[in-house]
Image (cartoon, rainbow, N blue to C red):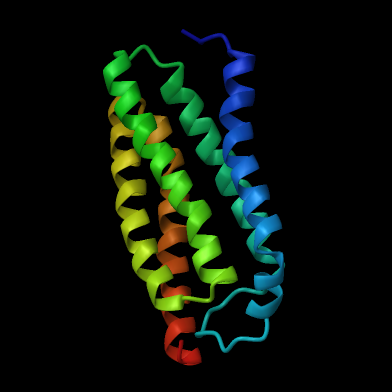
Length: 160
Protein backbone atom coordinates (compact mmCIF):
# COMPACT_ATOMS: atom_id res chain seq x y z
CA UNK A 1 0.00 0.00 0.00
CA UNK A 2 1.43 3.35 -1.07
CA UNK A 3 1.43 6.27 1.32
CA UNK A 4 0.32 9.64 0.06
CA UNK A 5 3.17 12.18 0.03
CA UNK A 6 2.71 14.94 2.58
CA UNK A 7 4.14 17.82 0.56
CA UNK A 8 4.47 20.35 3.39
CA UNK A 9 6.38 17.87 5.59
CA UNK A 10 8.57 16.79 2.66
CA UNK A 11 9.49 20.38 1.78
CA UNK A 12 10.31 21.18 5.42
CA UNK A 13 12.33 17.96 5.79
CA UNK A 14 14.40 18.80 2.71
CA UNK A 15 14.66 22.53 3.38
CA UNK A 16 16.17 22.20 6.86
CA UNK A 17 19.33 20.22 6.00
CA UNK A 18 19.76 22.10 2.71
CA UNK A 19 19.49 25.44 4.56
CA UNK A 20 21.98 24.27 7.18
CA UNK A 21 24.38 23.27 4.39
CA UNK A 22 23.88 26.53 2.48
CA UNK A 23 24.40 28.68 5.56
CA UNK A 24 27.45 26.65 6.52
CA UNK A 25 28.91 27.08 3.03
CA UNK A 26 28.23 30.81 3.12
CA UNK A 27 29.86 31.25 6.52
CA UNK A 28 32.91 29.15 5.65
CA UNK A 29 33.52 30.38 2.09
CA UNK A 30 36.86 32.01 2.94
CA UNK A 31 37.93 28.91 4.86
CA UNK A 32 37.17 26.73 1.86
CA UNK A 33 39.47 28.90 -0.26
CA UNK A 34 42.24 28.50 2.35
CA UNK A 35 41.55 24.76 2.42
CA UNK A 36 42.66 24.54 -1.21
CA UNK A 37 46.15 25.71 -0.17
CA UNK A 38 46.61 23.07 2.56
CA UNK A 39 48.54 19.85 2.28
CA UNK A 40 46.03 17.01 2.03
CA UNK A 41 46.25 13.25 2.56
CA UNK A 42 46.18 10.74 -0.31
CA UNK A 43 42.76 10.14 -1.90
CA UNK A 44 41.62 13.71 -1.26
CA UNK A 45 38.92 14.69 -3.76
CA UNK A 46 39.00 17.89 -5.80
CA UNK A 47 37.35 20.87 -4.11
CA UNK A 48 34.50 21.09 -6.62
CA UNK A 49 33.22 17.67 -5.51
CA UNK A 50 32.40 18.69 -1.92
CA UNK A 51 29.30 20.84 -2.64
CA UNK A 52 27.91 18.18 -4.99
CA UNK A 53 28.34 15.38 -2.47
CA UNK A 54 27.03 17.44 0.44
CA UNK A 55 23.94 18.52 -1.50
CA UNK A 56 23.16 14.90 -2.31
CA UNK A 57 23.73 13.87 1.30
CA UNK A 58 21.52 16.66 2.64
CA UNK A 59 18.76 15.55 0.26
CA UNK A 60 19.07 11.93 1.41
CA UNK A 61 19.01 13.09 5.05
CA UNK A 62 15.92 15.17 4.36
CA UNK A 63 14.10 12.24 2.78
CA UNK A 64 15.07 10.02 5.71
CA UNK A 65 13.81 12.65 8.14
CA UNK A 66 10.53 12.91 6.21
CA UNK A 67 10.03 9.14 6.32
CA UNK A 68 10.52 9.10 10.08
CA UNK A 69 8.44 12.23 10.71
CA UNK A 70 5.47 10.91 8.71
CA UNK A 71 5.77 7.30 9.88
CA UNK A 72 3.17 5.61 12.00
CA UNK A 73 5.66 5.12 14.83
CA UNK A 74 4.80 6.44 18.27
CA UNK A 75 5.46 10.11 18.86
CA UNK A 76 8.05 9.24 21.53
CA UNK A 77 10.07 7.06 19.10
CA UNK A 78 9.85 9.70 16.37
CA UNK A 79 10.80 12.46 18.81
CA UNK A 80 13.88 10.57 20.04
CA UNK A 81 15.06 9.81 16.51
CA UNK A 82 14.43 13.33 15.24
CA UNK A 83 16.13 14.86 18.30
CA UNK A 84 19.31 12.90 17.57
CA UNK A 85 18.97 13.89 13.91
CA UNK A 86 18.71 17.56 14.90
CA UNK A 87 21.71 17.33 17.21
CA UNK A 88 23.90 15.76 14.52
CA UNK A 89 22.75 18.37 12.01
CA UNK A 90 23.71 21.18 14.40
CA UNK A 91 27.04 19.45 15.02
CA UNK A 92 27.58 19.19 11.27
CA UNK A 93 27.05 22.94 10.96
CA UNK A 94 29.48 23.67 13.79
CA UNK A 95 32.13 21.27 12.44
CA UNK A 96 32.46 23.41 9.31
CA UNK A 97 33.08 26.50 11.40
CA UNK A 98 35.59 24.75 13.67
CA UNK A 99 37.46 23.25 10.72
CA UNK A 100 37.26 25.88 7.96
CA UNK A 101 36.85 29.18 9.81
CA UNK A 102 38.70 28.56 13.06
CA UNK A 103 41.24 26.17 11.46
CA UNK A 104 41.27 24.07 14.62
CA UNK A 105 41.92 20.75 12.88
CA UNK A 106 42.40 18.46 15.88
CA UNK A 107 39.34 19.76 17.79
CA UNK A 108 37.39 19.51 14.53
CA UNK A 109 38.46 15.87 14.18
CA UNK A 110 37.35 15.07 17.75
CA UNK A 111 34.09 16.95 17.13
CA UNK A 112 33.57 14.91 13.97
CA UNK A 113 34.02 11.64 15.85
CA UNK A 114 31.39 12.68 18.39
CA UNK A 115 29.15 13.87 15.56
CA UNK A 116 29.54 10.47 13.90
CA UNK A 117 28.25 8.77 17.04
CA UNK A 118 25.12 10.94 16.88
CA UNK A 119 24.70 10.22 13.16
CA UNK A 120 24.96 6.46 13.72
CA UNK A 121 22.57 6.63 16.69
CA UNK A 122 20.06 8.64 14.63
CA UNK A 123 20.41 6.20 11.72
CA UNK A 124 19.81 3.22 14.00
CA UNK A 125 16.68 4.80 15.46
CA UNK A 126 15.57 5.81 11.96
CA UNK A 127 16.02 2.18 10.84
CA UNK A 128 13.88 0.89 13.73
CA UNK A 129 11.12 3.22 12.60
CA UNK A 130 11.55 2.86 8.83
CA UNK A 131 14.18 0.59 7.29
CA UNK A 132 14.56 2.78 4.18
CA UNK A 133 15.04 5.89 6.32
CA UNK A 134 17.90 4.21 8.16
CA UNK A 135 19.44 3.03 4.91
CA UNK A 136 19.27 6.55 3.47
CA UNK A 137 21.66 7.63 6.23
CA UNK A 138 24.36 5.11 5.26
CA UNK A 139 26.02 7.25 2.54
CA UNK A 140 26.22 10.11 5.05
CA UNK A 141 27.92 7.85 7.61
CA UNK A 142 30.39 6.61 4.99
CA UNK A 143 31.15 10.15 3.82
CA UNK A 144 31.67 11.38 7.38
CA UNK A 145 34.10 8.51 8.03
CA UNK A 146 35.95 9.63 4.90
CA UNK A 147 35.77 13.24 6.12
CA UNK A 148 37.31 12.13 9.43
CA UNK A 149 40.20 10.58 7.49
CA UNK A 150 40.65 13.81 5.52
CA UNK A 151 40.33 15.97 8.64
CA UNK A 152 42.93 13.96 10.55
CA UNK A 153 45.23 13.96 7.51
CA UNK A 154 45.00 17.74 7.23
CA UNK A 155 45.80 18.01 10.94
CA UNK A 156 48.87 15.76 10.61
CA UNK A 157 50.16 17.35 7.41
CA UNK A 158 49.66 20.98 8.36
CA UNK A 159 50.86 20.99 11.95
CA UNK A 160 47.82 22.64 13.47
